[in-house]
Length: 592
Ligand code: PEP
Ligand code: MG
Image 1 (cartoon, rainbow, N blue to C red):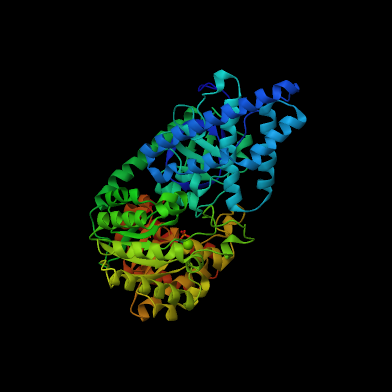
Image 2: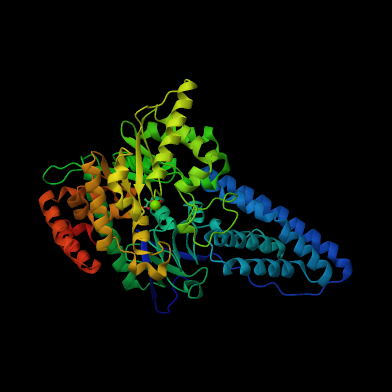
């Protein structure tokens, strides 16, 4: 489609999940190429068609390996690992046997047979409401599209595809992206993405923010509205995708971009400052990371350490990183890079929307209420123990803390701490150094844990409040379901009461409390964080400087008064108004 297309612009609104404004051509993901025509073949042609398929598979394999190598160089081996799964799918014997059988029995052209078999397979996967199988469906589509192209006429066969895009930068449009899709995005090609489903606190959105990729999710039926090649503008601040933006729109966006650039520039002065309120109360402002290579970026943004190192992404995506040696290396690298500040490593939080092929063989009816986090760790010592030893080894090389996710009762934290103590003993016997006083924390992200905070506080050195899950479980609102996204409010008074209780319980018992869910970086909520007396906020890299500035403009008594005021308020909307009023008064330039 020509760039000077004269048709009117069309705007689609969704949820802004990762800031930034980009303009470029769309690349649609997740739609199989045109249906190949069905053609009868003679008995004598069957072997030739089989050979054609074999050649296409070999070629596809070579392309995937080449792409894997390219991405490994540009984005690191964790991001390239998705292609290992693609290679496995290519060799899936269920699919290949079925194709060979149909070729012999029905005698039709191989591209058509391949297409039909894959479509049927995808249809059955799409009907199952399971995130792991959905993730597989997306991978299968990627691979199938590539094979079909390689089966096609010679001149199309080398056309670049999917994450390679169109040899230039593009905006990816998809029904959905899994956390591993997002991790494998090649930043050299993908400027931003828009999806039909998704939410602000899904791990896909969290990943987009940490990779600095502008993103909008939750635009229904978007794939039927745009085509590959359409020129669009993606507004990751206001959650808009604009097809064929008019001159006037483009001019407005130039102004907005310039304003944002000025603000970012201005915020640089916060980089080397302490994080403290206008009346001198200090708060630790650290960063959340998903991959060890993010450390340099968060350091550049002035983070005072890493408050949450989510270990499941590098771990689940790449088999090589599951070894004890590779983990130890990763943790030591991060510990040394952030020293003298601390890194808090969270033991692996598999389950929910973060599945690991091979471990989750049976789909669960309710994955977010199932085998997740510490439950998996305690049941799988072969996963848990090497990770604990790796973390302990890293504690000898920097300031390291360890925390356990998804704690729902006191027994779980006791069992986790007992496992840690046993591994300390093992290292001691082996003469390996570690920090005997390593800080141990519990994530408070399940209402039962919040309610039992006084008891749990006696078992650990700190709490880290995971508001993403605390909201999900307190309000019974699936964090990745955009249909109920309106109910997902950190401002809900029930959630706020739990947070207040947890911080007070921590202080009553002489331990510190931080917040590491996305709420920690929500500037509207900063006055409440200060008013509650939260000791540490751990936020995404892009939020660090603005949160530091917001804190610098607030005074503790006015924040405490706000806490008192909202104590008597029953509705989330009213809470939001009160918070917004104070935020607008104190740091209007940070609130869009
Ligand atoms: C949370 O639940 O708030 C949290 C920080 O953990 P995650 O988002 O990884 O579940
Ligand atoms: Mg959580």
